[in-house]
Image (cartoon, rainbow, N blue to C red; front, side, top):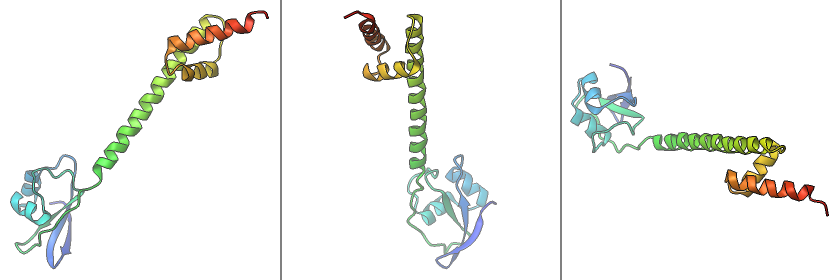
Length: 144
C-alpha cells in the first residue's frame, strides 16, 4: 500500500496522500482497514474524502481519532475559475475590439486603439461604439 508510515500521538499510522479519484471504500480496501475505522481516526462524518489532502490510516486499533481540517482545495478551484473567467473576458473583449475595428476600416478609417476607446465609451456595445465613431468622424470633416 502507498503512504508514509508515521507516529501520531503515540500510535503508528500511515499518511495517505488523497487523490481526486480516491474514495473512502477504495482507501479502505487498499490498506485493509475498515472504512468506518478510517473515518473515526480522521474525524470524517460523511463519505467523501476529496476535501482532505491526507488521511491517517491506522495500523493498529489504538490509533487516536482526530479533528481534521479540510484542504484549501476550493480556494485553488476558485482561483482557477477566476483565471478562466478573466481569460474568457479578455478574449471576448479582444473579439469585440476586432469586430469594431473591422467595421471602422470598412468605412475608411480608424485604429485598433480608437476601437478600444470607443468600445469602452459605449459600454462594450459594438453598434453604439461604431455610431459614436461615425459621429466624431463626420464632425472632424465638417467645415466650420
